[in-house]
Length: 284
Ligand code: C2E
Ligand code: MG
Ligand code: MG
Ligand code: MG
Image 1 (spheres, rainbow, N blue to C red):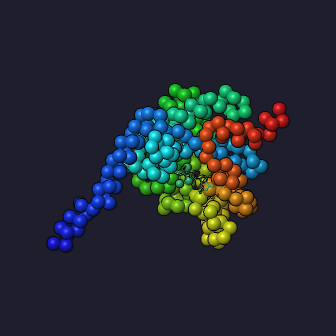
Image 2: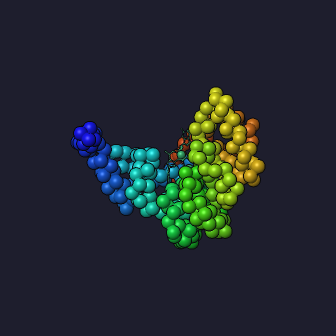
Image 3: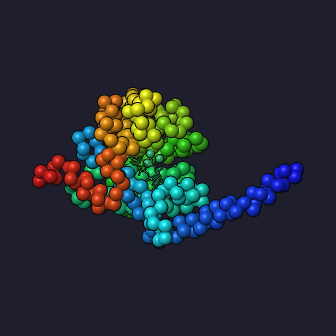
C-alpha cells in the first residue's frame, strides 16, 4: 500500500512529467492558433510513374511555428488526433488541396494531376464526413476524380461497416482511395476485397532495406502481387535510390514516391518539377 502511494506521489511530482504536461498544453494552444491563423502550409511530394512522368502529389502538412520553426507532422498530428483538433486541421488540408485542384484544372499542363490527402480516423468517424468532403469539392470546384484519400490500416479496426459505406458513397462521385503504410498495420486481409480501394501504398519501412533484407524484399513483392491479384494499383513510398526503384520495377511496381525523385516541396516547386518532366510541355 505504501509502495503504491509512493509510486503515485512520485509520479505526481515527477518534474519531467510536469514539464511534459505543460509542454503538451502549450503545444495544443499553439496548434489551435496555428489552425485559426496562417501557420499551416502544405508541401507537395510528387508521385511518379515509370519513365518519370508525374501523376500527382501527396500533400503533407507543415506547421511553420513562429519560434520553433518548421514542426514536422509527426510532432503534432498525434496530438491533433487526441484533442480533436485534427477535424479543423483536416478540413483546412482538404479545402486547400481541393482549391489547388480547381486551379490546376484551368491549366492544361496541370489538369490531369491528382492530389492525395491523408485522412485520420477521427475525421472518417465523423457522421457528416461524406457530406463535408462533397461540400468542399463543390465549393472549390475540384474534380472529385483527381482527389485521392489516403487511409491507414489502423483505421479499419472498428466500425468497418460504417467506413466501407462512407467510402462507397464518395467513390460514387469518383473520389479514389489509397491504403497508406500498407503492411505495417494488422488489418484482416479479408477487408481488402470489401473496401473500394484503388491503390495499396507499400510502406517505406519495407522499401528502405529492400535490397539488403530478404524479408523486406519478400514483403514488398508480396504486396505488389496482392495488389495485382485484387486488381488494385500499387505505389511505393520512401524510394531513395535508383536501385530501390529498379528492384520495385522488376517486382511489378511502376509508381513511386520518395526522395530519389523529389522531397516534399512548396506548390511552386512541385509545379516546376511536374512541368519539367512532362514531355508534351517541353516539346511545345
Ligand atoms: P505518410 O502519409 O506515410 O507520408 C509519408 C512520409 O514519408 C512523409 O513524412 C514524407 O515526407 C516522408 N517521405 C517521403 N519520401 C521519403 C523518402 O524517400 N525517405 C524518407 N525517409 N521519408 C520520406 P512527413 O511529411 O513527416 O509526414 C509524416 C506523416 O504525418 C505522414 O505519413 C502522415 O501519416 C502524417 N501526415 C502528414 N500530413 C498529414 C495531413 O495533412 N493529415 C493527416 N491526417 N496526417 C498527415
Ligand atoms: Mg500518406
Ligand atoms: Mg505512408
Ligand atoms: Mg506514415
